[in-house]
Image (cartoon, rainbow, N blue to C red; front, side, top):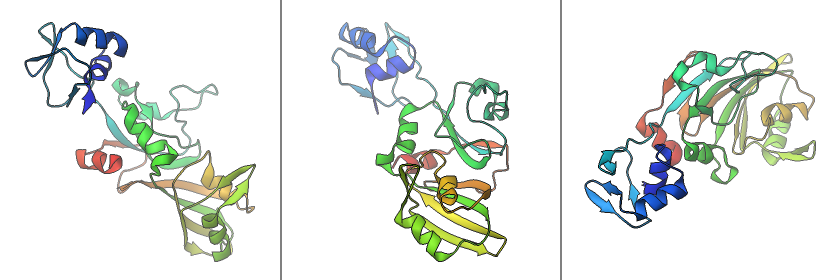
Length: 234
């Protein structure tokens, strides 16, 4: 449910403030009933809203999952001329924004949407939505290093912390580590390893909330289902 004035603003009728005046003037009806007071809410996908008798169609919200390959930036344009994720999407989706970012050399699960509330719920630290990463690094990562990650450590004046960390494989030359983060500070996974003098060879995000990367191939996208969207917002 969204406030009627927000629905009108999102649909491009007028600004939210101007939409309030339109409502107070008695020009808007919801399911045939005129609304003259502020505070009314509508369900955009089910309620029928009219302005001066003409239907108002709400902005169609899009929620997409992309398996971002390495070697792409998440911005629409890059000052260095590097390729962007938008080259993988339909042209009519150029207005979507990425929910958080993956750096140039990081790959994996990335959401794109035109729903600002959805983005806020997934990126603001107070909601604590977990993100899971798979890191392939040089050298052996032992149990003591993993404990440091989950206890939290300071790097360049900022505290970094993994909620969970476990080794999937380890040898003298290479280790594969799974980490789960709640905040997702700038380059947090890479910086955790950098703080221990460890070089990351490959970094992939494999899960956001309950949504897993699964079988989605690199460079491909799909839309999120209604239950998936609800699980992320719940």
